[in-house]
Image (tube, rainbow, N blue to C red):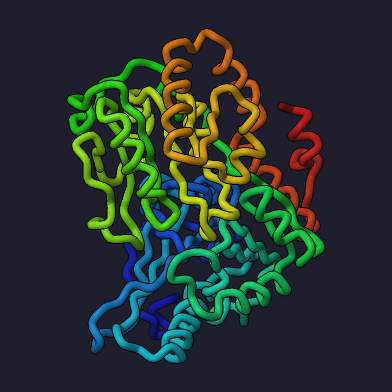
Length: 405
């Protein structure tokens, strides 16, 4: 179908015989599927168990004289998710880019006949997709993107247009919910959840990865994107105050220069790791860190790594991120610190906790985590979408899901 309408398509995904008019969810995301496995990947891989999922990424530039095309492949870690990447000639004017993206999108959706759910993680993909008439439009606001470094100029106006068009709005944390709840009549808070079984692997003794095994103990680690939300100055001062501690930093460096990262003998940047590798690294840490800067870009964040660290059996030391303090600040295993001196003191307390998991702090964290799972989050979202579609069955009732747990 795609080649018949004159749109070149590069396929790596295998074709399979479609069911009769299945539901399709197309997810417009500013995050690459293979970048960091987080909220979009957790949710889309679960929605793919019950419907077709198309994960539409941001365009990739190709040669100025090449022809625009779509690259289509299946996600290696979620075979039922089809990843679509537009490839556009470099240097195209913005209006031409939008027109080309619209044509590519129309061609890709042309063969679909069942119910369509349009799921947005970024309002910036609205201009080329707003002509589509889905049965349900979802805006999942996982971050306040307008507060991020290099935020697009028209993001806020596009976001308002998206909110006006949406049938349901989800938020990635309580702070975001408070910021959005009065802007739409159907807003629901779904804070970051956790795959407890995956991260619980860190509680068992595992072989240290080769790039971590020779680092001295104690080890205090962080994994995640290292960008403008990361407090480099705090890390530098804490590492200077405790030269006998090893600070392990995992993750890609984005939107800041690697030259601006603090360089000390006890700070170790080990690069990005896969989601499957994280429990192995976490297993070799004594304390898990969240040294986020307290600035505009972190005002509304609700870090997924908080429950992940705890599920891995590691005490956490964090700067006073609002949602972390609100949801986890009362736990003995989560320490909150504002200054380098407080951070070091909290790390020392956390190191003592890590030596005594039997003392009760871990059981307290486990009790809280028992009510949190991505499966439950996705099921509740699916129930709300079913309400809009008018297809809810008793089996998908959020009330029944809660009772079943």
